[in-house]
Image (cartoon, rainbow, N blue to C red):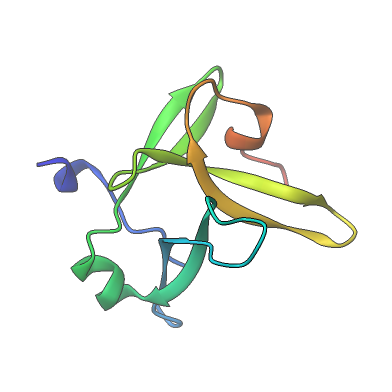
Length: 102
């Protein structure tokens, strides 16, 4: 059972919000899988678990139920960007995550 080596992707214990992957029903993104924040109890019941995979010196967040990876969708730093789950391979820079100094 892969649930033992995985985790819920949560904002904080105080907010009790966890990421779930849902089909995007807004045109023209019928086939996108977007991230929504729901209660962690709901995410746990739906088995919305994630795994961190190494990827060329960075990491990919893999959504176990769909096998998709967390990716930045179209946008930019001025207007913001959406997150979605999309096929993991081949890994692009939009699907790899790094630690940034603060």
